Image (cartoon, rainbow, N blue to C red):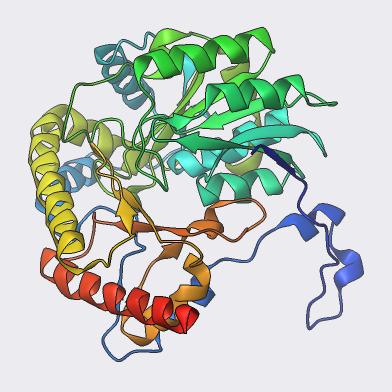
Length: 413
């Protein structure tokens, strides 16, 4: 089923009584979910949280980054002045080189360095969306994209997924049946967040063909593309169509705290994104950009080999723990890379309704419904295998299995 969602606009009111001073669009801003997560974690003295989508601490190259940082600070004060609004030039050149290694050909002026790929998503929304404009998203989709597009009062066209990601037939039906055609298609084709699913090559071509025929701009978010642990690489959408706007980041491959991402796409679009970015914060942080450029040239490829081996081991450890502890009727996928897998509960269990019981047992996760624009009921949940110590996977799944069995028993009784 395809659904169209316009998030309700409420009245923003605070304890200061200044609701009338806020912009109307401020009613679209979603509160962070981390308050809810914190409350859940406090329900148990020793909680295990499977919701963190960050790299494992031991898989971040801390010592080598320290060496790079020392080199950069030795270059000061030359690194402490203002920089180009489109980002540090040598880093943009490196990004273009690495994209070319994956068959994505862009010039240096087609790359904008951003404060993580999240800023790139926000800039795309700022540039492309007027109030009420439509964005096609996968159901479910990355929550941060919804938060960004909410700021521009987007209307969502939620298209379901199958085992291979976004369903082209459902996408075609959505576009054909829209009275006001959507402007953007936001997709994570490789190791999708939250499901871990990957679109095959034929699927990507079909989606791009549909988007082209309907005049839909494709936004490809690719934070996990270099973290494949199984199977063969699939060309990014940007490699198949030069009109695709490609989002990338070093947050998953190096470290999220560095906040270095990028947008690459047609020059006409990137130039306007640069202007929007300059109005927001003039330019990005120059010293960190230099650190990342040095790190990427010095050791990133070798580091990625080590990281992939670590994530493969972590994924397999979690899969084994699921096999030991899940009751009959629970299903999960085996992603070929990335940070997440998607676990489906037996009907009629709802993942958000189950969450307090799981938290009481000391295990928390991200319910699938949180990854829809309308936070709908959902029988699935996201499990991250990227950051927790592997020793916690087995007790975590044992706690989850216990909570599921109790919920099933309560509903059947």
